[in-house]
Image 1 (cartoon, rainbow, N blue to C red):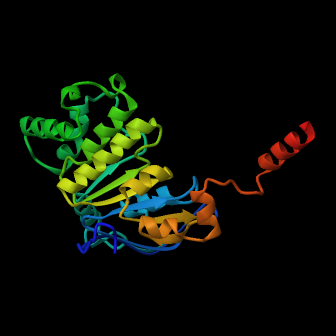
Image 2 (cartoon, rainbow, N blue to C red):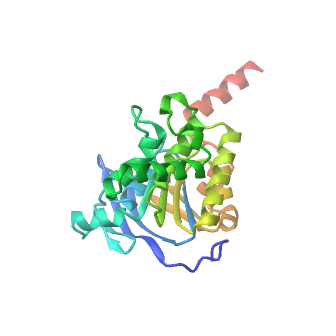
Length: 269
């Protein structure tokens, strides 16, 4: 049981996901479930397959084998219309925010409303103001992304992800590139949003401090596989060598650079 004691319905499910890219196995038979009101964090080093997994969960990429269910819809068997309907339940914030630079923050937030609703422009404007207000950006709604800080752009991307009041939120490296104070503020914002509305969150990150703050459950990936899955406490208690290396921030002993540095300092003393 997660620390949030979640018993909500399953909103995201992956079964036996396999994916190869350029002859390299990226996903190797992964199973995952995320329930309403639960935050699942996908941890792992760069290149381990976590962003590919997130794209498969969101229906942006198809696995070679396996099935993905989003809000009860089998994305691997559904028609394009059914996939589109399932995505109506999903809000996603991409790495770096992925805001359109020529649009104001309000116009960026309105984009999902333009695509998935028939609301008049005046109503969309009001909703954009509300969503930006939720992340503390109401006064910046008419500014361009280039006119605000990186942390504000991340919050604007979150406001856009919230535009349709989704049941599911997915984030790719939400705190990447942020200073520690801004990153901590974003963590607290995610916790506050979940307290207001028990959505299912899937967060891909390699930022361990953030991961252990926001997660109800987490998995740690390596070479397309889950090395460990469980609550933050269970992951911390794992004695798997690769898990310990990642959590303890120990580089592989086989790194040539490490050997070179040791030789350099040994010869210098």
